Amino acid sequence: MKHALATIAGIVQSRRVAGRTLVVGIAGAVASGKSTLAAAVRDELTPLGADVVSTDGFLFDNATLESRGLLMHKGFPETYDDVGLTGFVADVRAGVARVPAPVYSHVIYDVLPDGHQIVDRPDVLIVEGVNALSALAPLLDLRVYLDADEADLEAWYVTRFFDLTEEARHDPASFFSPFQFDDTRMSPDRG
Image (cartoon, rainbow, N blue to C red):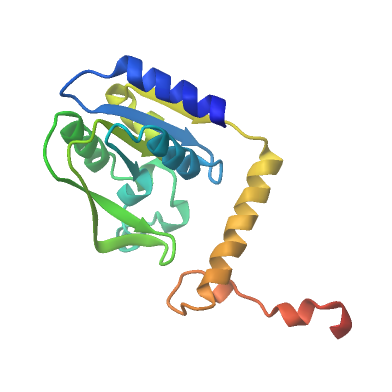
């Protein structure tokens, strides 16, 4: 990963234009490591001001998806507010101050109704999400796609799912609370 970070940081440095936010898009399958890579790139670019925004915040909220009959398609292209996403990125890229981005919660499995991340003229904006490259193609200065073997993706997804259900043990309002099971029933001495 160190080589990838150095390569991405080098490309970012070579493409920077003074007075304009450079926009990096990171996409890949669910559980491919988009958020992890985006955070690592941000940290690698520490001398610059860099912000990370997830396209998950631009999913339509569950009530809207339900009313449109799209809740079971959540994550597919038609479930994102692409107009809001492209408008957000265009504003940040143009140097607009204090641009709000909606925030998604994996705990409640929905967009936070009053949650916003404020992005204020960063040198670099990193946008990560399954649709980052397709929805933002004309606005991106650098495109990164994460590829992984299907077996790895499945293992990472399952691990993340169990981590979220474990966290839900202490939060009954969590979307993942109903997916918990009693570990003691699976112990060898309980047959």
